[in-house]
Length: 154
Image (cartoon, one colour):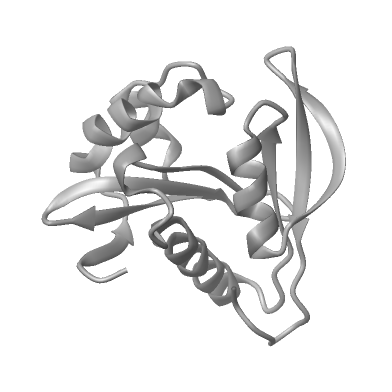
């Protein structure tokens, strides 16, 4: 998307990312996060990225690359900027990040059953459901993306 810059999360982003996450908490595993929690998560196997538009953070995406396979999430785009390619661009950045750490990348994401928009987004990227689980007592799906080694990006 024109005018959007995706970059690694910095400590200075923590407050705005926490606010964006908390506004969309119904979609995520954690119902409420603090800036301090976000800062403590980054590093040692967990990385976050943010998208900036006009100097403001408008989206974020995390990836836990300690897990095998790595797990993407959460991913969130400001409601007024959805369906404009920011989430897709962030996914590409995360895949590029992971391919620098590992040669061939299979990734998973957990999506609440109630988050039908999120499920549709991940299906559009090529994710397929491979199982289910409970997140805070709510049914959720595990979805996997497994591109052929060295081939294509969504």
